[in-house]
Image (tube, rainbow, N blue to C red; front, side, top):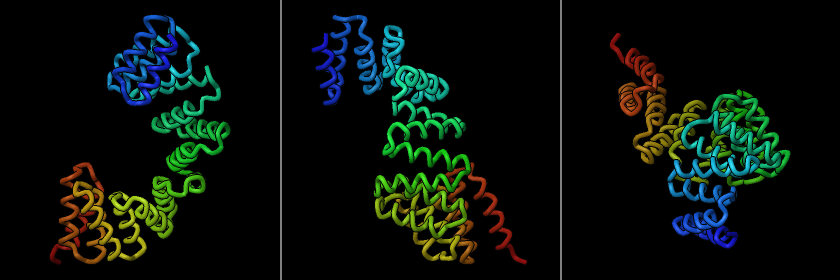
Length: 289
C-alpha cells in the first residue's frame, strides 16, 4: 500500500494526475481504512477539477480519522471554492484543533474571517500565524489588509512595511500600502508606492489608474492624464480608469471630454454611481448660463 501511495504522491508532484489517481485508488483497495490515501486522492480529484469526488474523499478521510488535520484543511479549501466561508471556517477550526501548529490553517481561516467582515478574528489568526512563523510573509500581508478593512491604517501600513522588509519586490504590498496612504490623506506617498508597483509590473492597469488619480489630487493633471491614458490602453474595459480620466479632464476644464469619459465609464459599469453624479456635475457646469 505504501509503495502505491508514495508513487501516487510522486505522480501528483509531477502533474500526472491520472496516474496519481490510479495509484491512490490502488492504495485504498489494499488498505480501505487509510485516511491518508483518501485525503491524497481527494486533493488529486480537486486538482483535476472534480470537486464532488474530492469532497467525498475528504469526508471519508475524516470519518476514518476524525483527527486528520490535512483532510479538514483540504475540505475547507473545497468549501471556500464553492463560496461557503462559514463551513470553511468550521473545517479550518477543526484542522487547528487537531494540529494547533498548522500555520496555513490559521492563514486561511484568517482570510475567510476577513472576507466575512470579522476583521478582529482575522487579525487574531494572523497574529497567531506570526507567533508560529515570524517570517511568514503572507501573514503580514493579510494582516495589513485586515487592518485596512478595519480602518486601522497606521497598522495596515506597518504590516505592509514588514512585508516589504522581508520581500522587497512584493508588488502587492506596495500597491496596498499606496491605498492605505491615500486613505490616510497622503497621496504623495501613495504615488511613491505605485511608482514601485509599476517598476515591478509595467503592465498593471490598476496601478496606473490609481497613480493617475493621485496625480490629479496633488495638482498634476497632465501626469495624471498620461497615467490614465496608459491604464485604458492596457485595459480598455476598465471603467474606473475612464471615470478617473473624466476627473482629470474636468480638472483641466475640458468638460466635453470629461462627460464622454463618464459616459464610457457608465457604459462599462452601470453600477458606478460616482460616474453618474460626476457626469451631472459636469453637464451642469457645461450648460449655457
